[in-house]
Length: 349
Image (tube, rainbow, N blue to C red; front, side, top):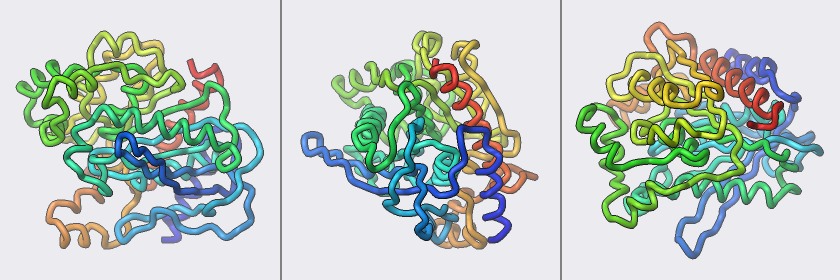
Protein backbone atom coordinates (compact mmCIF):
# COMPACT_ATOMS: atom_id res chain seq x y z
CA UNK A 1 0.00 0.00 0.00
CA UNK A 2 2.88 2.38 0.77
CA UNK A 3 4.24 1.79 -2.74
CA UNK A 4 0.87 2.66 -4.29
CA UNK A 5 0.51 5.86 -2.27
CA UNK A 6 4.06 6.83 -3.19
CA UNK A 7 3.29 6.43 -6.88
CA UNK A 8 0.14 8.50 -6.49
CA UNK A 9 2.21 11.25 -4.90
CA UNK A 10 4.59 11.13 -7.85
CA UNK A 11 1.64 11.59 -10.19
CA UNK A 12 0.75 14.84 -8.47
CA UNK A 13 4.34 16.07 -8.34
CA UNK A 14 5.14 15.31 -11.98
CA UNK A 15 2.12 16.82 -13.68
CA UNK A 16 2.99 19.89 -15.77
CA UNK A 17 0.17 22.22 -14.75
CA UNK A 18 -0.48 25.58 -13.19
CA UNK A 19 0.37 25.12 -9.50
CA UNK A 20 0.67 22.40 -6.88
CA UNK A 21 -1.76 22.23 -3.95
CA UNK A 22 -0.95 19.92 -1.07
CA UNK A 23 -4.57 19.82 0.09
CA UNK A 24 -7.71 19.42 -1.98
CA UNK A 25 -11.32 19.69 -0.96
CA UNK A 26 -14.20 17.41 -1.89
CA UNK A 27 -17.91 18.07 -1.78
CA UNK A 28 -20.89 15.93 -2.78
CA UNK A 29 -24.34 17.36 -3.46
CA UNK A 30 -27.54 16.61 -5.32
CA UNK A 31 -28.89 18.60 -8.25
CA UNK A 32 -32.70 18.39 -8.26
CA UNK A 33 -34.68 18.23 -11.49
CA UNK A 34 -38.36 17.89 -10.67
CA UNK A 35 -39.49 18.72 -14.19
CA UNK A 36 -37.57 15.91 -15.93
CA UNK A 37 -37.30 13.57 -12.93
CA UNK A 38 -33.54 13.36 -13.45
CA UNK A 39 -31.79 14.44 -10.24
CA UNK A 40 -28.00 14.22 -10.42
CA UNK A 41 -25.37 13.30 -7.88
CA UNK A 42 -22.65 15.94 -8.28
CA UNK A 43 -19.18 15.64 -6.76
CA UNK A 44 -16.42 18.24 -6.96
CA UNK A 45 -12.71 18.19 -6.10
CA UNK A 46 -10.98 21.58 -5.77
CA UNK A 47 -7.80 23.26 -4.46
CA UNK A 48 -7.89 24.14 -0.79
CA UNK A 49 -5.60 25.44 1.94
CA UNK A 50 -7.41 23.55 4.69
CA UNK A 51 -5.28 22.08 7.48
CA UNK A 52 -7.93 19.49 8.42
CA UNK A 53 -7.09 15.81 8.19
CA UNK A 54 -7.92 14.39 4.72
CA UNK A 55 -10.18 11.35 4.38
CA UNK A 56 -10.23 8.64 1.75
CA UNK A 57 -12.72 9.36 -1.03
CA UNK A 58 -14.08 6.60 -3.30
CA UNK A 59 -12.33 3.89 -1.29
CA UNK A 60 -14.16 0.57 -1.70
CA UNK A 61 -13.57 -3.12 -1.17
CA UNK A 62 -12.25 -3.22 -4.75
CA UNK A 63 -10.73 0.18 -5.53
CA UNK A 64 -8.11 2.32 -3.78
CA UNK A 65 -9.45 5.73 -2.79
CA UNK A 66 -7.86 9.17 -2.81
CA UNK A 67 -7.34 11.65 0.01
CA UNK A 68 -9.29 14.91 0.28
CA UNK A 69 -10.86 17.10 2.94
CA UNK A 70 -14.64 16.90 2.80
CA UNK A 71 -16.42 20.26 2.55
CA UNK A 72 -13.15 22.18 2.87
CA UNK A 73 -13.12 25.89 2.02
CA UNK A 74 -11.68 26.54 -1.46
CA UNK A 75 -8.33 28.22 -1.95
CA UNK A 76 -8.41 31.79 -3.18
CA UNK A 77 -7.76 32.22 -6.89
CA UNK A 78 -9.15 31.46 -10.33
CA UNK A 79 -9.08 27.90 -11.68
CA UNK A 80 -9.87 25.95 -14.87
CA UNK A 81 -12.74 23.46 -14.70
CA UNK A 82 -12.61 19.82 -15.80
CA UNK A 83 -15.86 17.83 -15.97
CA UNK A 84 -15.63 14.02 -15.94
CA UNK A 85 -18.08 11.63 -17.63
CA UNK A 86 -18.01 7.95 -16.66
CA UNK A 87 -18.59 4.95 -18.90
CA UNK A 88 -21.59 2.63 -19.29
CA UNK A 89 -22.60 1.29 -15.86
CA UNK A 90 -19.69 3.14 -14.29
CA UNK A 91 -19.80 5.94 -11.74
CA UNK A 92 -17.93 9.05 -10.69
CA UNK A 93 -15.62 7.02 -8.45
CA UNK A 94 -14.01 5.32 -11.46
CA UNK A 95 -11.85 8.31 -12.35
CA UNK A 96 -11.34 9.72 -8.85
CA UNK A 97 -7.60 9.08 -9.29
CA UNK A 98 -7.54 11.51 -12.22
CA UNK A 99 -9.77 14.03 -10.47
CA UNK A 100 -7.48 14.00 -7.45
CA UNK A 101 -4.32 14.40 -9.53
CA UNK A 102 -5.76 17.35 -11.47
CA UNK A 103 -7.17 19.07 -8.38
CA UNK A 104 -3.74 18.92 -6.76
CA UNK A 105 -2.46 20.76 -9.83
CA UNK A 106 -4.93 23.62 -9.61
CA UNK A 107 -8.04 22.42 -11.43
CA UNK A 108 -11.59 22.31 -10.17
CA UNK A 109 -12.89 18.87 -11.17
CA UNK A 110 -16.58 17.96 -11.26
CA UNK A 111 -18.31 14.66 -12.02
CA UNK A 112 -21.84 13.28 -12.04
CA UNK A 113 -23.49 9.88 -12.10
CA UNK A 114 -25.49 9.66 -15.35
CA UNK A 115 -28.95 8.20 -14.52
CA UNK A 116 -29.71 4.94 -16.30
CA UNK A 117 -26.11 4.24 -17.29
CA UNK A 118 -24.48 4.19 -13.86
CA UNK A 119 -23.99 1.49 -11.24
CA UNK A 120 -26.15 3.68 -9.01
CA UNK A 121 -29.13 3.75 -11.40
CA UNK A 122 -29.80 1.26 -14.20
CA UNK A 123 -33.30 2.43 -15.04
CA UNK A 124 -34.05 1.40 -18.66
CA UNK A 125 -36.18 4.51 -19.14
CA UNK A 126 -33.38 6.83 -18.06
CA UNK A 127 -30.76 4.90 -20.03
CA UNK A 128 -32.81 5.24 -23.22
CA UNK A 129 -32.52 9.01 -22.91
CA UNK A 130 -28.90 8.86 -24.04
CA UNK A 131 -29.10 12.45 -25.28
CA UNK A 132 -29.48 13.54 -21.65
CA UNK A 133 -25.86 12.64 -20.87
CA UNK A 134 -24.36 15.81 -22.43
CA UNK A 135 -27.09 17.84 -20.73
CA UNK A 136 -26.04 16.31 -17.38
CA UNK A 137 -22.60 17.86 -17.91
CA UNK A 138 -24.20 21.19 -18.84
CA UNK A 139 -26.00 21.14 -15.50
CA UNK A 140 -22.77 20.28 -13.68
CA UNK A 141 -21.02 23.28 -15.23
CA UNK A 142 -23.95 25.51 -14.27
CA UNK A 143 -23.79 24.29 -10.67
CA UNK A 144 -20.04 24.82 -10.26
CA UNK A 145 -20.21 28.27 -11.87
CA UNK A 146 -22.97 29.27 -9.47
CA UNK A 147 -21.02 28.29 -6.31
CA UNK A 148 -17.61 30.02 -6.31
CA UNK A 149 -17.83 30.24 -2.51
CA UNK A 150 -17.87 26.44 -2.31
CA UNK A 151 -15.50 25.38 -5.09
CA UNK A 152 -13.51 28.42 -6.20
CA UNK A 153 -13.77 30.92 -9.04
CA UNK A 154 -13.74 29.55 -12.59
CA UNK A 155 -11.23 30.86 -15.11
CA UNK A 156 -12.92 32.38 -18.15
CA UNK A 157 -12.89 30.21 -21.26
CA UNK A 158 -11.17 27.27 -19.53
CA UNK A 159 -13.63 24.39 -19.32
CA UNK A 160 -12.72 20.87 -20.43
CA UNK A 161 -14.67 17.63 -20.56
CA UNK A 162 -12.89 14.30 -20.05
CA UNK A 163 -14.82 11.11 -20.73
CA UNK A 164 -14.08 7.40 -20.47
CA UNK A 165 -15.75 4.87 -22.79
CA UNK A 166 -19.36 6.05 -23.27
CA UNK A 167 -18.23 9.17 -21.43
CA UNK A 168 -15.88 9.89 -24.35
CA UNK A 169 -18.89 9.97 -26.67
CA UNK A 170 -20.62 12.24 -24.17
CA UNK A 171 -17.64 14.59 -24.14
CA UNK A 172 -17.58 14.86 -27.93
CA UNK A 173 -21.29 15.64 -28.03
CA UNK A 174 -20.70 18.60 -25.70
CA UNK A 175 -18.09 19.85 -28.17
CA UNK A 176 -20.41 19.75 -31.19
CA UNK A 177 -20.13 16.22 -32.58
CA UNK A 178 -23.41 14.89 -34.02
CA UNK A 179 -24.67 11.31 -33.85
CA UNK A 180 -26.45 9.56 -36.72
CA UNK A 181 -28.45 6.51 -35.54
CA UNK A 182 -28.83 5.21 -39.09
CA UNK A 183 -25.11 5.42 -39.76
CA UNK A 184 -24.44 3.59 -36.50
CA UNK A 185 -26.91 0.81 -37.29
CA UNK A 186 -25.29 0.26 -40.68
CA UNK A 187 -21.84 0.13 -39.11
CA UNK A 188 -22.97 -2.35 -36.45
CA UNK A 189 -24.18 -4.66 -39.21
CA UNK A 190 -20.54 -4.73 -40.39
CA UNK A 191 -18.91 -4.80 -36.93
CA UNK A 192 -21.43 -6.60 -34.66
CA UNK A 193 -18.64 -7.73 -32.31
CA UNK A 194 -18.05 -4.22 -31.00
CA UNK A 195 -19.22 -3.66 -27.43
CA UNK A 196 -20.54 -0.26 -28.55
CA UNK A 197 -23.14 -2.08 -30.66
CA UNK A 198 -24.31 -4.39 -27.88
CA UNK A 199 -24.44 -1.53 -25.36
CA UNK A 200 -26.40 0.64 -27.78
CA UNK A 201 -28.85 -2.19 -28.42
CA UNK A 202 -29.29 -2.66 -24.68
CA UNK A 203 -29.88 1.06 -24.09
CA UNK A 204 -32.21 1.34 -27.12
CA UNK A 205 -32.07 5.14 -27.36
CA UNK A 206 -33.75 5.55 -30.78
CA UNK A 207 -36.90 3.49 -30.33
CA UNK A 208 -39.21 6.31 -31.46
CA UNK A 209 -38.94 9.36 -33.75
CA UNK A 210 -38.81 11.85 -30.87
CA UNK A 211 -35.91 10.06 -29.17
CA UNK A 212 -34.10 9.69 -32.48
CA UNK A 213 -34.44 13.42 -33.15
CA UNK A 214 -33.07 14.35 -29.71
CA UNK A 215 -30.18 11.90 -30.07
CA UNK A 216 -29.15 13.21 -33.48
CA UNK A 217 -29.63 16.87 -32.54
CA UNK A 218 -27.14 19.53 -31.52
CA UNK A 219 -26.09 18.90 -27.91
CA UNK A 220 -23.13 21.26 -27.84
CA UNK A 221 -22.23 23.39 -24.83
CA UNK A 222 -20.34 26.40 -26.20
CA UNK A 223 -18.56 26.91 -22.86
CA UNK A 224 -16.50 23.74 -23.39
CA UNK A 225 -13.08 24.63 -24.82
CA UNK A 226 -11.16 21.33 -24.71
CA UNK A 227 -12.01 17.61 -24.88
CA UNK A 228 -10.20 14.44 -23.78
CA UNK A 229 -11.49 10.96 -24.63
CA UNK A 230 -10.23 7.90 -22.76
CA UNK A 231 -10.67 4.73 -24.84
CA UNK A 232 -14.08 5.89 -26.00
CA UNK A 233 -16.93 3.92 -27.51
CA UNK A 234 -19.87 4.69 -29.84
CA UNK A 235 -17.66 6.96 -31.93
CA UNK A 236 -18.50 5.17 -35.19
CA UNK A 237 -21.96 6.71 -35.12
CA UNK A 238 -20.60 10.26 -35.12
CA UNK A 239 -20.84 11.96 -38.48
CA UNK A 240 -17.75 12.77 -40.56
CA UNK A 241 -19.05 16.28 -41.17
CA UNK A 242 -19.46 17.18 -37.49
CA UNK A 243 -16.07 15.73 -36.53
CA UNK A 244 -14.26 17.48 -39.39
CA UNK A 245 -15.74 20.79 -38.21
CA UNK A 246 -15.28 20.20 -34.48
CA UNK A 247 -14.30 23.61 -33.05
CA UNK A 248 -12.74 22.25 -29.86
CA UNK A 249 -9.18 20.82 -29.51
CA UNK A 250 -9.29 17.12 -28.66
CA UNK A 251 -6.88 14.67 -27.06
CA UNK A 252 -7.74 11.07 -27.93
CA UNK A 253 -6.13 8.45 -25.66
CA UNK A 254 -6.57 4.79 -26.60
CA UNK A 255 -5.90 1.53 -24.82
CA UNK A 256 -3.44 -0.34 -27.02
CA UNK A 257 -3.87 -3.81 -25.53
CA UNK A 258 -5.53 -6.21 -28.02
CA UNK A 259 -9.31 -6.15 -27.74
CA UNK A 260 -12.03 -7.88 -29.74
CA UNK A 261 -14.92 -5.70 -28.60
CA UNK A 262 -13.24 -2.28 -28.37
CA UNK A 263 -10.17 -2.31 -30.62
CA UNK A 264 -8.29 0.97 -30.83
CA UNK A 265 -8.17 0.90 -34.62
CA UNK A 266 -11.96 0.80 -34.93
CA UNK A 267 -12.77 3.33 -32.21
CA UNK A 268 -10.17 5.83 -30.94
CA UNK A 269 -7.80 5.68 -33.93
CA UNK A 270 -10.71 5.88 -36.37
CA UNK A 271 -12.10 8.87 -34.48
CA UNK A 272 -8.75 10.68 -34.50
CA UNK A 273 -8.45 10.33 -38.28
CA UNK A 274 -11.76 12.13 -38.71
CA UNK A 275 -10.92 15.07 -36.44
CA UNK A 276 -9.18 18.25 -37.68
CA UNK A 277 -5.47 17.44 -37.81
CA UNK A 278 -4.47 20.87 -36.51
CA UNK A 279 -6.42 20.55 -33.26
CA UNK A 280 -6.28 16.88 -32.35
CA UNK A 281 -3.70 14.67 -30.73
CA UNK A 282 -3.81 10.87 -30.67
CA UNK A 283 -1.93 8.72 -28.14
CA UNK A 284 -2.16 4.94 -27.92
CA UNK A 285 -0.86 3.40 -24.70
CA UNK A 286 0.39 -0.02 -25.67
CA UNK A 287 0.05 -1.79 -22.31
CA UNK A 288 -3.23 -0.19 -21.22
CA UNK A 289 -6.54 -2.05 -21.33
CA UNK A 290 -9.98 -0.49 -21.36
CA UNK A 291 -10.05 -0.88 -17.57
CA UNK A 292 -6.67 0.77 -16.97
CA UNK A 293 -8.63 4.03 -16.86
CA UNK A 294 -10.49 2.90 -13.72
CA UNK A 295 -9.09 3.34 -10.22
CA UNK A 296 -6.38 0.99 -9.02
CA UNK A 297 -7.55 -2.30 -7.56
CA UNK A 298 -6.69 -3.43 -4.06
CA UNK A 299 -4.80 -6.69 -3.47
CA UNK A 300 -7.27 -9.55 -3.72
CA UNK A 301 -9.85 -7.44 -5.55
CA UNK A 302 -9.78 -9.60 -8.68
CA UNK A 303 -10.67 -12.73 -6.70
CA UNK A 304 -13.38 -10.83 -4.86
CA UNK A 305 -14.93 -9.71 -8.15
CA UNK A 306 -14.76 -13.20 -9.63
CA UNK A 307 -16.50 -14.68 -6.60
CA UNK A 308 -19.29 -12.14 -6.89
CA UNK A 309 -19.70 -12.30 -10.70
CA UNK A 310 -17.46 -14.61 -12.74
CA UNK A 311 -15.74 -12.62 -15.47
CA UNK A 312 -15.76 -9.29 -13.63
CA UNK A 313 -12.18 -9.79 -12.51
CA UNK A 314 -11.14 -8.35 -15.86
CA UNK A 315 -11.79 -4.93 -14.32
CA UNK A 316 -8.51 -5.28 -12.44
CA UNK A 317 -6.53 -6.53 -15.43
CA UNK A 318 -4.35 -4.35 -17.63
CA UNK A 319 -2.62 -5.42 -20.86
CA UNK A 320 -0.27 -8.41 -21.09
CA UNK A 321 3.18 -7.62 -19.67
CA UNK A 322 1.81 -4.27 -18.57
CA UNK A 323 3.38 -1.82 -16.19
CA UNK A 324 1.56 -1.34 -12.92
CA UNK A 325 -1.74 0.51 -13.26
CA UNK A 326 -0.23 3.27 -11.12
CA UNK A 327 2.48 3.89 -13.72
CA UNK A 328 0.00 3.72 -16.61
CA UNK A 329 -2.20 6.26 -14.84
CA UNK A 330 0.78 8.49 -14.16
CA UNK A 331 1.29 8.65 -17.93
CA UNK A 332 -2.39 9.30 -18.59
CA UNK A 333 -2.63 12.07 -16.00
CA UNK A 334 0.50 13.73 -17.34
CA UNK A 335 -0.84 13.60 -20.91
CA UNK A 336 -4.16 15.11 -19.87
CA UNK A 337 -2.60 17.85 -17.78
CA UNK A 338 -0.05 18.84 -20.44
CA UNK A 339 -2.75 18.96 -23.12
CA UNK A 340 -5.08 21.11 -21.03
CA UNK A 341 -2.31 23.44 -19.98
CA UNK A 342 -1.37 23.96 -23.62
CA UNK A 343 -4.96 24.62 -24.72
CA UNK A 344 -5.84 26.90 -21.81
CA UNK A 345 -2.60 28.87 -22.24
CA UNK A 346 -3.76 29.88 -25.72
CA UNK A 347 -7.31 30.61 -24.71
CA UNK A 348 -8.77 27.11 -25.11
CA UNK A 349 -9.01 27.38 -28.89
